[in-house]
Image (cartoon, rainbow, N blue to C red; front, side):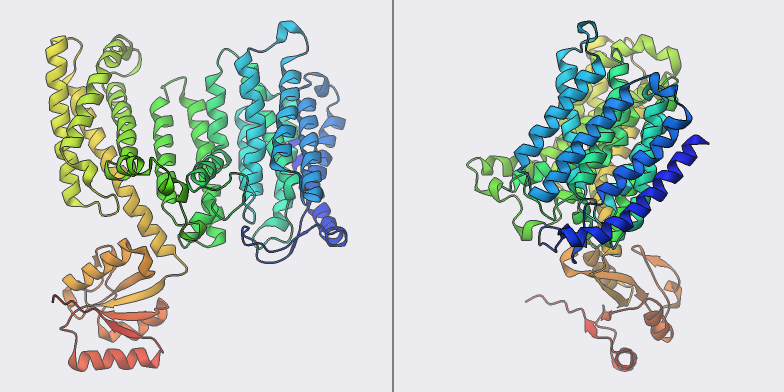
Length: 597
């Protein structure tokens, strides 16, 4: 009941303070003008972080007054709040005076170091190992700036932080303590209230004071369970990384690609994950919602690991989530940014020919991904074959044979020609290459294992399961690019909605090319075909809406921008009628022409 009251008070306070800040900000010059390296298109009041801070404190004071004895149980909440207040001050000065990136970085490291010192205790007996101190300090500063970088689109940083705050409070409450949990609940309420003003189109920005305050709260709170579980450092750290996957992924993505593009990491730009989703054709709201969903999936993955890790090791699950994140990163990295000047530093470097040959001709990224898939699938095959405690006697055999499996499978996949094929055009012929490579790799593995170990500890079922899992995993990763292309092309707001007349061979070829070639900016919404056997069927993933009698109705219903005639056989009276209907609706008609000269 107290948590609900705290959340409601924090929300109401943030909404009220947001309205006040919107009135005061223009008077003191706290307005962000439109800039080419930012997503906003109109002057917008800033300093909304003040509303988040006051809302958090207002909601938390209720808890402190209602449960005065809880405050004495642990001082961690006080140190976290003080560190967040200090980062708010740094952000406030940055909003007003434009601090240099180095100054902000140094300030966050200093505040992080003092927070680590406070959480570990002032007594020498409570001192942390050096690696804890360094990792904790860097983690605090890194997450503060990650939230600062994530604040690049209306409603994004506040919404992602709200999701992360809720999962931190729910999943790590035993390690956080009641006061710190209530502090996070208050922060969640304040973020919900601020979103009233910050949702697209934003009427108020949080500013650096808000993003750095939020980052400090999340970073400080996430350090507490890790420091409280010094023996099991990895377990809570994995949960924290999954919960905070969106800001961490966005920061790593931007820093790596800016470095490859020859741009300063501290220089802003419309090159974040959210911006590249928008470049694919998603609306601003859709891009933000996709990242909300990404954060929600990360939190649910953390919940699954915490819930089931005592029953079943969750390493394969974490590895699968990591593979998905890597695939999304690889796909989004191919989306143009910086006005088509991507990777200019890489192209001009002295080692560019080597890197180009390695990364693009031999598909080094695919090889590394397949290496992970091989190891994970082999482990999962053992888990499926030997459930529970019966797996323990075979773990040593798994570990000793894993290098053999990796070597044989990678060699067979290379020999099958898989790494000479494009992900964008992955089809049935490529599937045969995968099956051939996995099959030959499995045979080589069985031969090598039985030759070296005489079959001791081997299981034929494991090898069969491993082959099936690996084939499915490799095909799934390759098909994922075509699936993402399909989703992006169908949601692209810049694409023309095209109705293809004729669902024969030319029509199918035309639709496939539209899907594969994003530069065309054409989205096939369906076929019209006069063959009654094709009516109301799906061909190459596109529905056949009917015959010429339904043409006008379909064009109105699907807001068609143009009609393409796919076959030379569409002529005479049929073509005349099509053009009459399109002319009445003021829609152009074009024809596919195939010529070999």
